[in-house]
Image 1 (cartoon, rainbow, N blue to C red):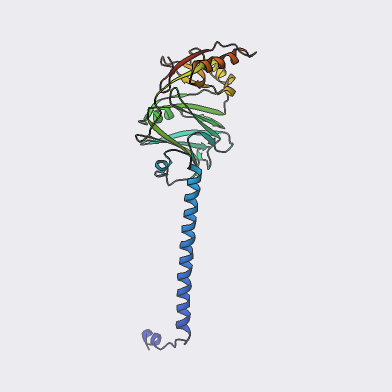
Image 2: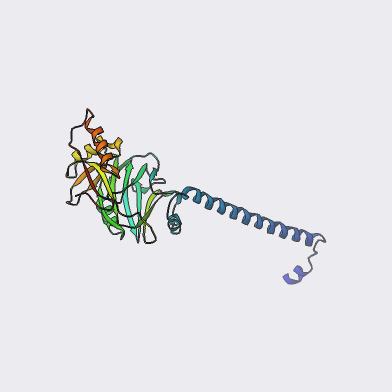
Amino acid sequence: MTGKERYEQINIPSGLSGVIQQARQRARNQKRRKMMIWRSSSLVAACAAVMITANVPGVAKALSDVPVIGSVVKILQVGGGGERTDGVSVTTTKESDTLNINFQIDGEQITSAPSYTVDHKEGPNRLIFTFNGVRHLDYDKLEQDIKALKNVKEVYQNIILDDSAIGFVVELKDDVDYSVSEYQQPGYIQLKLSSGGVKSTQAHELFFVRSEDMEQGEALAMLAEQYSADGSSVVQTQNGKFTVVMGAFDNRADAEKHLKEFTDREDYSEPLHVDSWMSNENPQ
């Protein structure tokens, strides 16, 4: 007897057909439940992203290009995040209008970004990045990558008197929107710039309390640290030097009042004065 003949003579239990139908129905039900769970999870994730980014202008454009690698933690324009760490090395990669700031320890990319802050100021329009727990920075590569972004006007270091912290300033051109995204697994920061479609405020005169022009170095960093609680920041001047500035007042009277508070302090030593320039320009 052939194998085909033996197969044809096998007796099929009378209840087997019903069992098969029940099994098929269970499989269909399980597949349907999995699809519902997947869709619900996707909706929750989308809602979470909206909650994280609800107050960030231009966020739809930022989310439209979210990279496949890593999971988004937050998208912001000012603020901070990351986790406390030490011994981190910083490298950068650039693509189109996007800069990725990558973090490694012993050559391996870490799962979360180190502690960081991002601040935005006018006079000129600029972003101030500060990273803590960082020991090594390829600044030449960072400068090259940032300057290659078409919406960037200038970039320079922000020297910090802490060997476990680094900072740099990115000056933006007019009518540029931006977002800063933090990712995990792997951990990195993404700066995304976009021009056009952004209705910026008209350039206007601002008043500051500022120092004299100085070379980039320890003395400049010490002065910036002395007034850090007053919101000090370092700005490059039109002659290529640097100055420490505080405030961004709409009128000279408020700036003069702020200067008087500084001169009344016991630790006041470096001569400061009131100056003004346009919100999209550098001081002279």
